[in-house]
Length: 162
Image 1 (cartoon, helix red, strand yellow):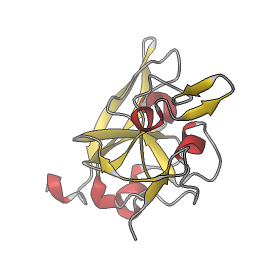
Image 2 (cartoon, helix red, strand yellow):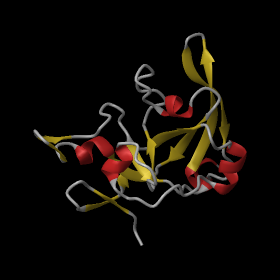
Image 3 (cartoon, one colour):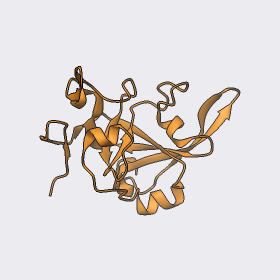
Image 4 (cartoon, one colour):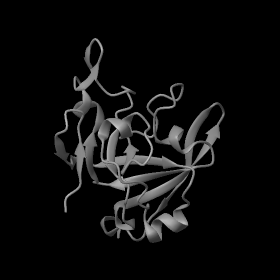
């Protein structure tokens, strides 16, 4: 069965291409596990607004097409991974463009608004990611005052890189 995201109006949206590369950052999963087992399912809720608002039990993971969007605001895969964590580059993974799908659809007392954290350029993806969809991983370090990825490790289980 195809996974679909629930929008604020109750309609369901199928996943679509997010672009050639998306980055996901985490401090919880080492590449030695991710390259063999993938990234595990983390929840069951398919509500896109709840996910975007950092709700619990989300079926989605947040990704971005850039390693860093805005360090001051904590936006970007390197910020989400934090110092010492890991950034994963994902291979053509489908998902949901959070800002586009929520734009003008989130009800408030004064009308409608959009995503709770605009500017992140977030793509929501299914949290269960097979190892074959992970291109590479890099550990987040601090170089002078800025976060960066130290060195990339290629995932030999990604067929597009073999």
